[in-house]
Length: 177
Image (cartoon, rainbow, N blue to C red):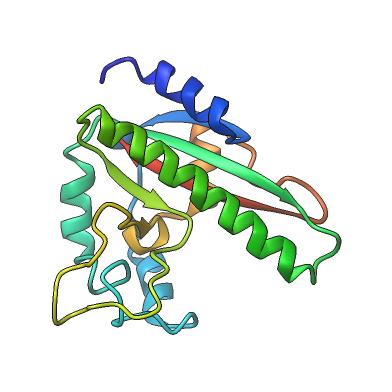
């Protein structure tokens, strides 16, 4: 797939609020971001394939990224009633991940080779890590942060507005092609 603009149009049509392209050579994978993962505030570090160290070392992630030309960065903006609207946050996350799964399914249907990096990792209740391979490889997604990316920087680098304003929450994912 060389016509990346057509894929961006498709992503907007299925419901993403904004989409932009970024050359993969401009992506920075930072050890400081991986260090935040190691702090294990979410409790998933070392427990899932989609989180470090299961998703590979930073060097392995860099090598995977280098196999692709362009990142299609897509975001959704969720309006919240207030900063404590956890139901709104969960609904926004669900909507974003549903759109991301649709985009991946479309690429898979065309036989495209791609690397999905999402807003958060997989959502299996119990992961097979490290004892067995992922049970759902077609849904498998590693977060951008697990790859060492500062999401706000990625958005800035490709011209997307990361902050949607008061009482909003922005979810960002990318597909490397």
